[in-house]
Amino acid sequence: MDLRHLRYFLAVAEETHFGRAAERLNIVPPALSMQIKNLEDELGGPLFIRTSRSVELTEAGRLLQVEAQRILEQADHARQTVQRSLRGETGQVRIGFAGNAVFSGKLTDDLRAFRARFPQAELIASEVSPLAQADAILAGQLDVGYTPDHSKLHIPALRCEKIGIWNRVVAIADDHPLASQPRLTVAMLAAEPLIFYDTHGADESLYTALTALLGQPPDIAHCSSSSLSVLALAAAGQGLALVPEPLMNICVPGVVYRPLDAPALAANLMLISRQKENNGAVEAFLKIATPRGNGAWQD
Image (cartoon, rainbow, N blue to C red; front, top):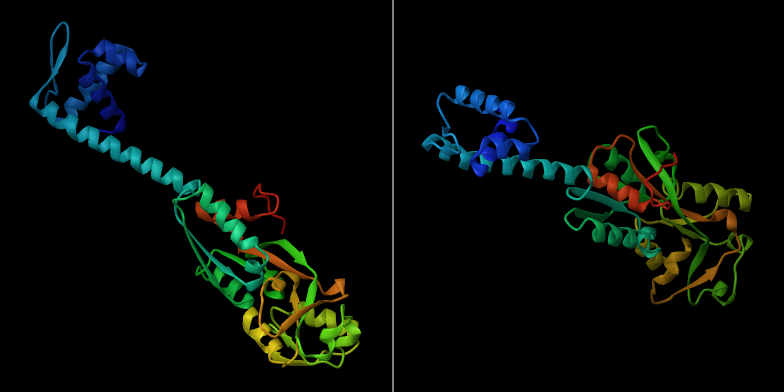
């Protein structure tokens, strides 16, 4: 007995006529009669009382009608559930992000777009340090990451795409002598203590580029684990912070932002995920989050 047998049986039960049921099923009546006979033989008894003009259900047939309807409804529910999952309409997407993803508006735009299209899917977003995101994705603890570019991303198991790039500005205490300058240059930073997000991790490219421009390693006075703590240290006069331009949206008492004339120090944002992904919801999110909006990746 399979689903086809049950569909044939229900058609005959509902039409009370083999000819009409066969027409409804788009098969010839003899083939339908054979399928019903096979079903009756398998179950061990008649399901219909046949007359010259119509058929009626036996007691066993009435019992099977109820069960058959229930089985087919459950099978259809299972099919729809799996298809919705494959299309990304259900399921869960776990997202890790660095602060710049929020302050640039990229993360919130992606979350809103995904929610509008797939309201039944679950989104879980949490702030995770850039260096930890790659490991968490490979360990199956996260599905998607928003992070600055760094060397741990460039491995075959990860796929990544640049989704944003911004100039850097200097976050500086409002009573610092350089706060009176309308624009700053790299040369002005040579003797200043700096605050980095992570000297040899998430900010490794900044460290390398700044060293090349200064001709010497920069003076890293503090390293911090989050964007807000970097700005708090800058407000306290503990050093200057070179932050992505979107962070200017954060109003921290005691901090002012000054443009930095150094395009080579631009900050970027990468979207990362597993190279081999079989979660439909995650794939649907990645398609929405990529700049082209068509799901094509460039590794």
